[in-house]
Amino acid sequence: MIVVGISSTVRTRIDRKLLEKAARAALSGLDAEVSIVVIGDRRMRGLNRDALSHDYVTDVLSFDHGDSPEGRQVEVIVCAPHAEREARAHSVPFKQELARYVVHGCLHCNGHDDTTQAQRNAMWMAQEQVMKRLFGKSYRDPG
Image 1 (cartoon, one colour):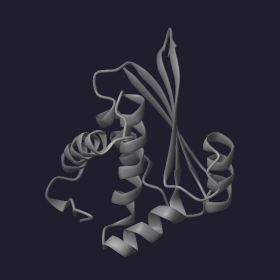
Image 2 (image 1 turned 90 degrees about the horizontal axis):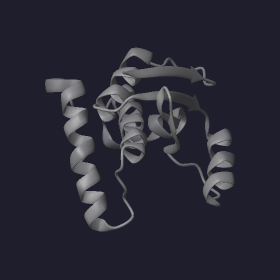
Image 3 (image 1 turned 90 degrees about the vertical axis):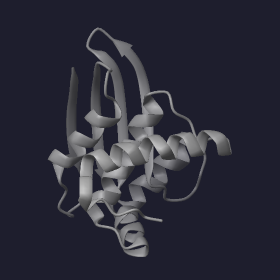
Image 4 (image 1 turned 30 degrees about the vertical axis):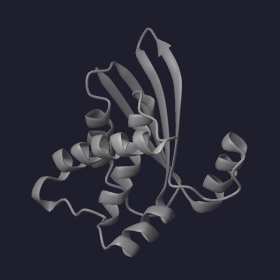
């Protein structure tokens, strides 16, 4: 079973049901408790700096806190303003871009990595499969 909790600190309207579906799809087959947090640029930059020593805004941070009796403990933090900018730049819907970040973060916690080009390619393929399942014919490839 996958249990998903979602919180947001931004004023932007968030499709919580979609983000929940995205997490469930990316973590299919796992027992997990997932915390999804939607934040703004300033907070994301600070978290990225603290967690990875990268002093810039990023799209998603994910943390696998390991297994517990309830299942894997996963935390996915996504940046809504970053998703808005990228959605405009690639002519895709905002909700699709934000869902992509949740999928990407959950895939990291499900064993995927994107350090090498081969890993990036494999992860992109897995991510796109999940996105196409989530959106069906309405899916817009960001190119």
